[in-house]
Amino acid sequence: MQDYYVHENYVSFELPLIMLLCVEGMFLMISSNDLFITYLSIEIQSLSSYILVASKRYSNLSIEAGLRYFIFGSFASGVILFGISLCYYFLGTTNYLDIYNGLYLIFLTDMVSSGIFIGFLFILAGFLFKLGLVPFHYWVADVYEGSTTLITFFLSVLPKISLLIAFYRIFSFSVNNKDLLLSLFSYSFWCLLVISSLLSILIGSVGALYQVNIKRLLAYSAIANMGYILLGFCTLSFIGCLGSLYYLYIYIFTLVNIFSIIIAVRRYPYLLKIKNLVEFVSISHSNFFVAFLLVFSLLSLAGIPPLAGFVGKFLIFFSLIHQGYYFLALYALCFSVLTSIYYIRLIRFLWFVEQDNYPIYNLVNISFRQSLFIGFVSIVNLFFMVFQGPLLIFAMTKLELYLNFVIC
Image (cartoon, rainbow, N blue to C red; front, side, top):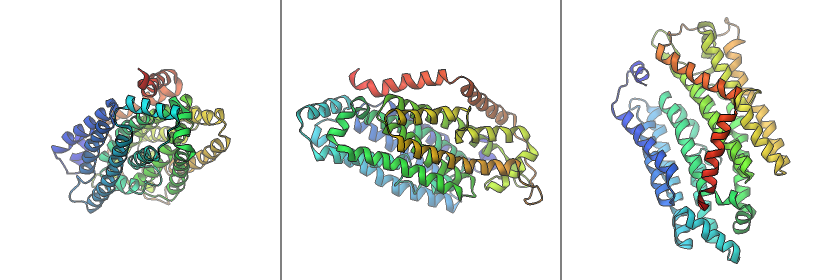
């Protein structure tokens, strides 16, 4: 991080402190058992994120992205708070265990309340925004492009884990008792989840095809990948949630490797970052090993067997077929093929483009610390490609905790 801001001629002692505050909010979010504590944790994490996005004060693009993120994010936070207040009004509690028991009591007595449905609907809408899912995805590409690459790296990795775990903990009753969800909220609640995931896969996959900026491409890729993760949850089964959580872990590890390479690679004469896809032509001619690791990560994101990303998508597809959602499985499989196109398009720029058609830049030598970090993350990805068992066991253990904590 220090090398990055030295190259950018932007050194600020506040940024590490704000990042630590953001991480603190994530830890509180994961460990909380109360809706209000979860909301306060989301606010700690969100307010820190707004400052981080707009931290590049001399960049109009960063200021605009931060302001847009703040306005839309504040509205989403208000929506979540309104949903929590409705749940408190109709259930008389904000504790997860008490909420689950109250919903189960209502389910047994057939006392269906539209107020509870609306409350959870508002909470769901707020989480869809925070996770960057359709129809609340319009801020993702602008924030990814407007913030500095290191901040984009930070915000695309850690908040996704904490928000998804909080989402699982709040809506764990739907997996523990599928009939409870379909009885209290009818099929409309489940259909909203499915439609959001399908549209996220569609818009993320199609939108990435037309991107020439690497960060905007990764932004639309994030929308599509979060759609796959939500689709696994829509099965309302343990194997589907396990596939989603495992896919999230693999996606995070792979994204760390990709962003590490993007941050490390710079070109002469002014130590400029590589921003557009055509500039990736220089990497394969200057550093064969780094180009190979980037291809390895991109193919893993595309779900090419036998890489680790394939196992995550396979678990999601298997859970859809096992639950009888054949159309959803076929839809996700077709768009999984489509998503591989823009990854292969970037690989084409890395290896299969004639040098005469695009300028070849002289790249700066990657430092030893950066090379060590990139190599370590690549070894971790290679380990999970060969040995999926340890990560699957870890995801299974955590998922049992997240989904069964209400009866502990």
